[in-house]
Length: 210
Image (cartoon, rainbow, N blue to C red; front, side):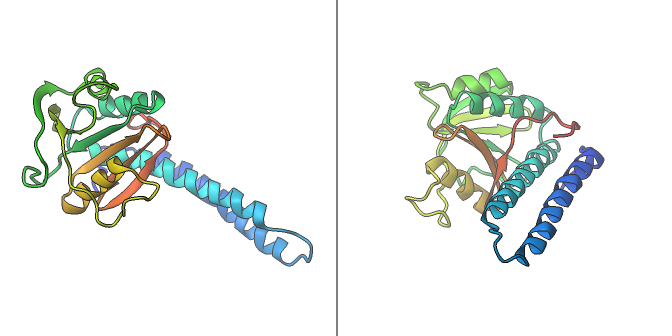
């Protein structure tokens, strides 16, 4: 894990507070369990939501940690993701890291432009000829758009995850690329790394407490 650009202390403090709150709720549930007439289902739902929020907070922070060693434009990228999520514009964005990707994707249209959030957002506007494929980012450049990624075999068709999520996971299963995906149906964002999907809470500037 590469976190040399990240201010860990504030995030760790925030996560510690949230985990301590969950721990306290679990201890309270154990005490309630001794009662004969108390129902724990509501508490379980509350704890489940807390854990989801903790995971989302941590993932949003670590996203910047994973991005910063590979691009100086991580703030532009995460801002673009935030805007796409707010507008419910589906998107698939690959950040190339160490591994070559040429043998894993069907190439799209060359772009060769400096990464900015406005350019990134314009590619995924509904009706754009390139909005259905994936954008490839290398360092500070949008290399190409409209690329086709391999689909994951671990996420079967017909699940709650659509084609974009299966493609994001599929490429991350075969390479060290970090793949961001925005769901137009749910208005949520996540990223795939090493074959796993992680939710992104919201845009958090690097170094700030989420």
